[in-house]
Length: 326
Ligand code: PMV
Image (cartoon, rainbow, N blue to C red; front, top):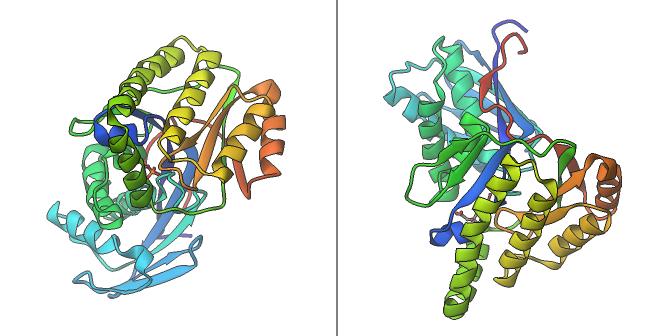
């Protein structure tokens, strides 16, 4: 299809540290091999048109950035204005969004969509944004979607790889690869959740129990070092144990649910080395670490209890222009 330019960006998972990161402990997140792909082409006149196949949603945008149509595109005017601030004289366009990432599941689908759209539009203009600026544009878009984003998602989806994150500090980028002979499995509870509500519940529990709960925050921060050590020594058993401890700690503060716990325990019973919720909890997804010899069993078992199960690579490349694939 001539005239089309496409860009894609990956989803992310938090490996350890969710919730504890809210009060200053570190978290580690990694990109995963599920992507959003956005293709764009020029139109002769405004309004611009944007269509999301996975969300079955459509909107139009006039030159001034006024959006008419689905609310799911509410970050798009901000993306256009951020690109204009950077000197892009944007022409009218048509954009199609395709995605392998379930929305509202804590996998960074909104950040990946914003990054892929901004990259595709700037590539159409002949001057694709580099990851530093793309991350900043995506952060501004995430503010519209999430209010106070931590900075994890925009960093991961643009740069790819892994990130060690502490609130108030620049995210530290790291290469992340699973120990050889293992895979990461993601399973969705099928339930959405509102991140802010789970964050508030966990904080309330932590504050009520603070002299004891404080130690969990310290422990979670130390777990980040253990996970980095396990990854660098390629110690799958240690990484699995770290997942299990992380799950126990966030569950103790109220982030888990029966549906999440069923998936976590089914994964472990099927032979996973470790399993935990990822992201806010309250619904959303779990991740499980499985040796390749147990992978099929873990995936099959999870499929009995989850509407959506995927085995994914981690630490994949960030947002890219997909040359010649549009
Ligand atoms: O579910 P997600 O990916 O939006 O992650 C939320 C992570 C929390 O630590 C629970 C909240 C936060 O702002 O860091």
